[in-house]
Length: 230
Ligand SMILES: *Cc1c(COP(=O)(O)O)cnc(C)c1O
Image (cartoon, rainbow, N blue to C red):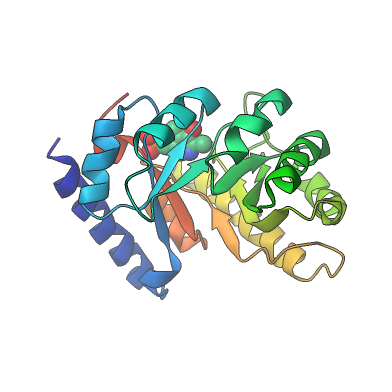
């Protein structure tokens, strides 16, 4: 593994190439640096190399890092892991984005806290695109009804959908997950009763972000390709 800066440059170059191959503008795709388990010093190193969006999956760990790095301007935190309702309060204090929304109970808890603080939060609806029991997220068939229910929460700015594809050597199986997400996004964009734009697709990790870009990913979430194996 090279330095964080050289890994970041490499991943960015691959994102640009994947965009070119897909006939897409690289400006449409954001790189989220997944910094879970890594100390604030490493976040600061990636920040110095140009990264601005960081992803974390545990509320307490993320809150501590955010508190340690408040001096870095324009740094955005995204929560990407399943969240218990009683942690909503911690998350709205520092997070700019939440990528794992999959229940109205959680939507309500986040919204209440957001209203108290007079702020809003960018949210992504998590979809279980592979159908594996081990994965969080709504079954694709339930997403449209959920999208309509989300209208009730004024503090949530619904930006789009998020998924983790199946972890597989078989590229076609992974691609099928991403294709399912693209189809779902198209349906939601035509659903007038849904709140939000659904312009965003948060999908693709270290092993599959180039493939995700071919299927329309607008945010790729990359950890190990930048920091090494966890
Ligand atoms: C850890 C994690 C990632 C990043 O995975 P890498 O293999 O480190 O790139 C992306 N998304 C979610 C939801 C994660 O938990």
